[in-house]
Every structure is written in structure tokens, then in C-alpha cells.
Image 1 (cartoon, helix red, strand yellow):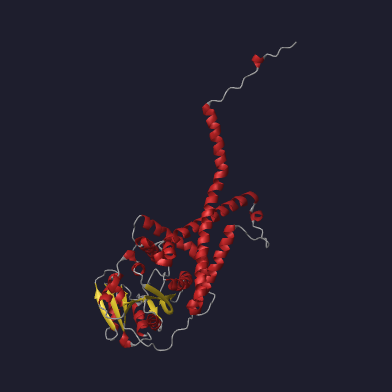
Image 2: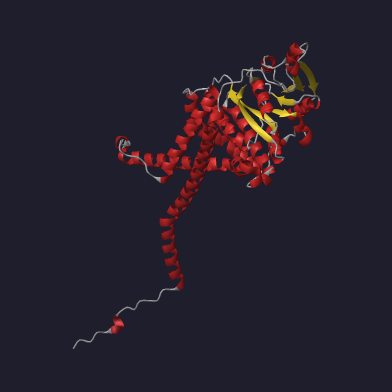
Length: 451
């Protein structure tokens, strides 16, 4: 009988501990490579959903406010005389404004307001061009007073004018802006109607847009006008812009004068008023036309200053954030002023990343199957029902409703324009340029220049 020799069968050797560890590590790596990208993508998608939902919520919130205020949004201006005309001083701070200051003052002199109730202070803040020579044409006008001082910044020029005024209302008009003839009449009427109102802001409109960027800004200003008007009844306005914001004189006596405030003193002063529970209202029938940057570099410099200053001022008044005693301002406006930049940049980065990814995949596809076979096939029955896509559709749709009503509020009726197209397709591309730099400057405490 055949005997099986077991001694000739090779025995399996036990795995060393290091080999076991290597197998486990390799299996784990395979698992991570398979599932980790999905996990990361899920996290980023979830963050996007949250941001889209919050943005959608804010749009709905503003539109609900709009429907509540719709009956008060007439664009017709008052025609009758006022029962009382408060004495008013308008300060025009100038620094190298030789090209525009004359038109600015001329627009003030044409205001539909009693001449004996209106005085205009032109304050040359140490200009190095011909500004001082040009304003001499107004020296014999009894409504106009000329002042010249050493350069100290816009806030010092405005403070100089406030200290030399005895009027009941005091306002400022930037030397590159122009007022509608009824603007002061409308604002004075609002002060008469509401004794508790301590400041009034106008509706800002872009003056004679010519370049693509200026036309884009025109639509942006229309949206801004709509949102400011919606924030007004909620006591949530966070900026009193340089072009023609008007104050009761006692405001300056109670909370002091302007300060530099990161080169955005108009934002800081509004927050100081809100911290002291002083009412700021928007008078949308008082229109002011302002010149806007015509080139990308000038726009970048302006918006970098605005973005950086807004974030820094918000941080300075962070004690008001998420505090119910400050109402909508504390719960929505201020958080949006600061965190909105990060939300915008996140959404931009998400879209840009996926756009680059799609392009890269398309390049690989073209190199593999050829250009003709890689062309997308149109399908009229296809509709993306992804949750993020649906939120995006709603976000865009409500955004168009806001633009529509912003244009109607500014111009009396909706008129389609190329500016709307430029805003929808360009703003999301150019805005990250100054937002990214503003965030960097805030993190490293780097200031910004005025121009």
C-alpha cells in the first residue's frame, strides 16, 4: 500500500507582524482612495447647500418685506410746498476734484429749496491740482462759503464743515456726485413726517454709464437701492453714504464727529448711530447721481477699500452681532456684511473648481474619441433635478425679481438693459478679485489707501 509522506508537503508559514500590518495598511489605503473623495465631495456639497439655502432665505425675506412695503413705494415726488423748511448745510469736501466739483456745486444751487434756508460749504482739503482755483467762481454767491485747509482726509474736511455750521440739518455731497433738483425737498419732507428720524440716505444712481463695467455697476446700484429701501423700515441700514446723506445736527452733538475708520467713515458712523439706537431711514425718491470707476483697476481700488472697511467696521462693532436688542441689523445685516464675503468666495470657488474639472474631462474625452464625438448632445427633455441645481434656479429667479423691482424703484418702470446682462455674467467673475484681497488684508491687518 502506498504511504503518503506528509513530510514532503510544504507547510504555510505564519505571517510576520510587519507583513500583516502592511496588508492592513494597503487595504486601508485602497479603501481611502475609493471612498475619501466621495466623503470630501459630500462635505463640500453640504456646505454649498447650506450657503445656497441661507442666500435663498435672505432673498425671500427681502421680497416679503417688499410686498409689505409695496404700497409705500411710489416713485412720484412731492410737488406741494412744505409746511416747514429746516435750515440746511451741505458740505462738499474736495481733494483734487477739478474735473467734477463745478458740476457738483451747480447741481446743489439748482435744488428746489428756499435759498435762504440752504448754505453750501466747499472745503478744499489741500488739493494739489486746480480745484481751489476752479471753486473761486462761486466766491460771490451768497449761498456758498469757501474754505481751504491742509490735507487731513475726507473725514477732517467734513468735521470742519460740521463745526462751522449752525443749521438744523447737515449733509455731505461727494465732489463727484450730482443731486436731483427735488432731492433735498424729499428728504426735508421725510424729516418733517418722522421726528424720531435722525438721518436720511438717498437713492444712489450711476451717472451716465459708458463702459461695460459702469453699466454693470448701474444694475448693482439698482439692486443696492432696492435692498436699502427694504432695510429702512427694519431699522437695519448699516451705511450712510457720502453722496447726500443728511443728519439732524444734534446727532453730532450726541455721538461726536467722524473718524477715519478704515477709510470708510460713512459705514462706521452709521453703526455708531445704530449702536445708540438712532433711526436711519432711506428716502428712495431723493435721487443722487454718482460717478463710478470706468476701469477694472479703479473699480478694484474702490471696492477693496469698501470691502475691507466694511469688514473692519463690522469687527469693531461685533458686540452688536447676533444680539436681539439690535433687531434685524444685529441678526442679519451685520453677519451678512462680514460672513457674506466668505460665502460668496466659497460659492465662487466651488463653481470655478467644477468648471475647470469639466473642461479637463472634456479635453481628455476629445483626445480619446475625437472632437466630433465629444460634442455634447442636446436633449430638450433633460432637466437637472439635482438639489443644488434646483436651489440655484430659485436663487437666480428671485435675484431677477429683485433686479426687476430695483430698476422699477430707480427709474419708475422696468426697462431691459445690457447692464443686467453684464451684471449677471461679469460680477461673479470680477468681485472675487477684491474680496480675496480684502480678506487677506483683514487677516494681516493691512490697511487700504483712499485711491
